[in-house]
Amino acid sequence: MLAIIKKEFKSYFLSPIGYIYIGIFLLMCSIFFYLDIFTYMSTDFTYMFGSASTVLTFIVPLITMRMFSEERKNGTEQLLLTSPRSVTSIVLGKFIAAALVVLISIVATLIYFAILCYFGNPQVGKSLVALLGFGLLSLAYVSFGMFASSITENQIIAAVISIAFFMLSWFLPGFSSSFVNFSLMDAFYMSFINGAISIQNLVLLLSFTILFIIFTIMVIQRRKSVK
Image (cartoon, rainbow, N blue to C red):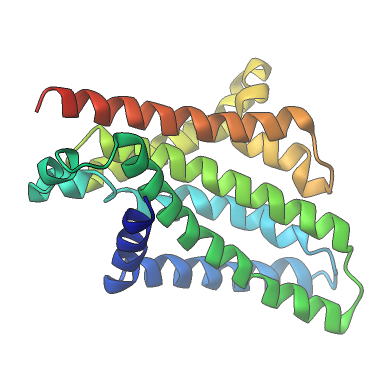
């Protein structure tokens, strides 16, 4: 699995995708940092993540849309599936590689926290909880984006499916309160952004991530069995 992680991780930076993702993410964070922090003269680091969470809907598909769909389109999927590596190790390897790119961009936001520490006294505990929640939300998005990529050979369709699903889960609670307990964005906003770790929301984000990793394994395993 380590070999797959290395291969996939390098591929993000041998192409512009990794740089584009990190660049867009940090650019938007810089804008939100200025608007939410400097404009209101606040030292609450969580404000920036509240705004940045909406950006994930549109930029996470940039790194997930090619994970499996590109393999199918280029005809290299058969080589991958007939290799001695298990489907589970292939899926986890691709997931971890994409997760590392996302986590690198999140760690880079500590620059803004350092700026806040220089000019004021931000709440460290609350900031770390928000950082944790944002990371879990990002991983949940990566897992679904990977699943979307596994069910189609068209990268654009995979990206559209991901964005549509993220937006749907974002707005559904507004139509019915019964969807609140299943909304990833609400799970982040209702606890982590406020500096509180809710076991229910923590389980929701982790369960969602694990569930769609398993769904992806099932899709790829089924495709392997018919090869």
